[in-house]
Amino acid sequence: MKTILSRPVLTLTAALLLGALGALALTAAPASSTPPKTLENLQAAFNGESNAHARYLAFAQKADEEGYGQVASLFRAAARAEEIHAANHAEVIKKMGGAPTADIQKPEVKSTRENLEAAIRGESYERDTMYPDFLKVARQERNRDAIQTFNYAKTAEAEHARLYGNALQNLDSMKGAGKGTYYVCTICGYTTTKLDFAKCPSCFNPVDKYVQVD
Amino acid sequence: MIEFPPIPSWDGLHPLIIHFPVGLLLVAPVFIILSLVSKRSGRAYAMAALILMLLGTAAVFVAVSTGEAAGQLAERTPEINRVLTHHEELAETTRIVFSVLTAAFALILFGPKLLKRELGRVPSAVLTLIFLVLYMAGALVLSNTAHNGGTLVHGYGVHALVDTPAATGQAAAAPSAPSAFERD
Ligand SMILES: [Fe+2]
Ligand SMILES: [Fe+2]
Image (cartoon, rainbow over all chains, first blue to last red; front, side, top):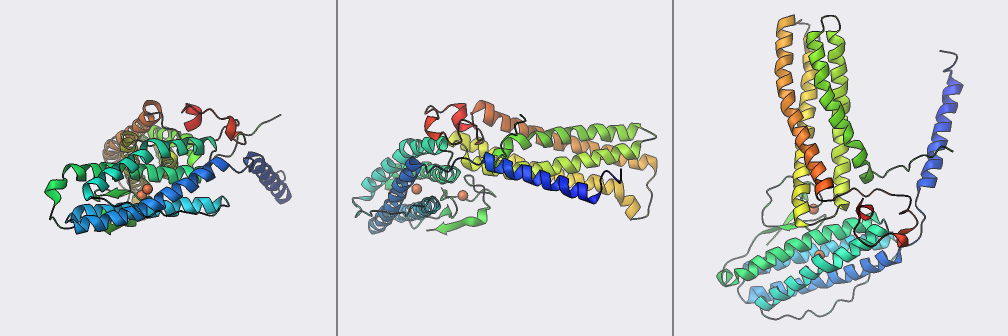
């Protein structure tokens, strides 16, 4: 036994194993073709999120002027989330060799009721059409980073649409009420009114990654 | 020619690893029972049970970590999110429960020796029986976690992203319908 498992034999075996694993890793690595469609989608999403960030901040200001303090807080929280989504998308764009660019339009600000309606339309489109389509392509292209950042955004947008819907329904009773308190996950942008969990329900990071927005 | 399967990514490891905790941790109590009934090899069976628990608990840690990575890439709808979050919580509980159970069983096995105080055969058997009852509660938590994971996969079609030969390098040829292949 001792002669069979002598040191040179063991070293040789280890070297062979390492070599085989190395070769395996090389052959297992996917071909490095640039997936242009996902990069294009990431740019579109980065532009959308950057504009949504600017738009919601303008909507928040209007809501404050009209005496809807809680709605203003919600817009600020969502703006923070969109900023996080934009930053996440930008990181993936850079990783893919691109440069994130956004064309920030001047937000069209109307009454808070109309702003909420516009926000719901935007979030619903992102939740039901834009991100599902982008995810489909990212899955086909096996782009894990893109799937993750699109998933984070899609999950948060669904929550935004729900929160805006609630606000629109109760808008009359919200007039004159003070600020609201919202919590935003700094990793994935998930937005919530209550921190009744230990880990973020979207990205599973610890709850201490959340920031309070009011 | 011998073909090696591709090395899975961390998130793609979840569907492979999850069978280990279930198998190892549900077999461990069989060895605990054997340790109680075998007069000659009781200690050896108990040691085998502890090794199974240690391996099974280590596998739970890997399963939770790979599961979180897989979950970040999983298909998301509010309904799936709800089940996914519940699965995550159950998995966390499983991890805590089996960490405690494994430590407790190690204490039952080595505690008396460390304290240089030999327990009699009867008190030791009673302690092991009490442990076995607690272990069954843990096994229930584990089974629930596994069942919940099964519901995610087979009920909601949520799959980890596993690279298939057709997918690597042939992205454009992938089907556009949301098939199991696409989400697998
Ligand atoms: Fe967003
Ligand atoms: Fe999060």
